[in-house]
Length: 183
Image: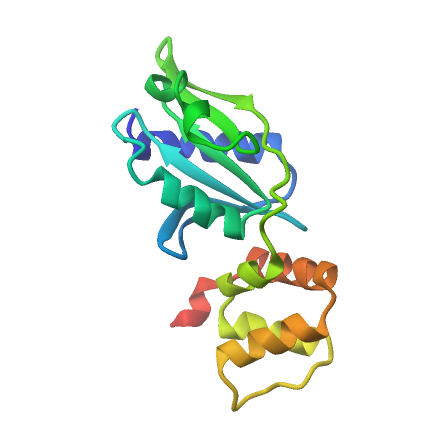
């Protein structure tokens, strides 16, 4: 199966097995692009897709980048990678296999992910737009910092808010992200 064929079954699986979530595709994280990002109330999950056509050539860099941003990580692989996938990812990463079975597509969680203790909200805040940062400032009665840079605003938010409060705000803003506000 190729990447495009794997996405729809993966999204259906996620929506049918997890409560209240929002799915993003192709988010820039450091030097990589996260194929799939799942936002829940207090967690961010990254999913790297390795289709039957893919290789593991860039995976080492992708793993480092995913581990900076996401609380949980998965590799979603086609049937041809299932025997080797665990050798290329850390033990804390989950594995999902997507394959054709008797004419239909099957999705199987082979290994559940463990909490990634490496990530910090200081990395995750980089995913937010300036408008979303402004919403967090307003929601927490912080100054607006209208004339300041996005970097300055992120730093102030990190200084002023406890990590658990910021994490909840961050997930809320991503969950409610409205792409129509860009135009």
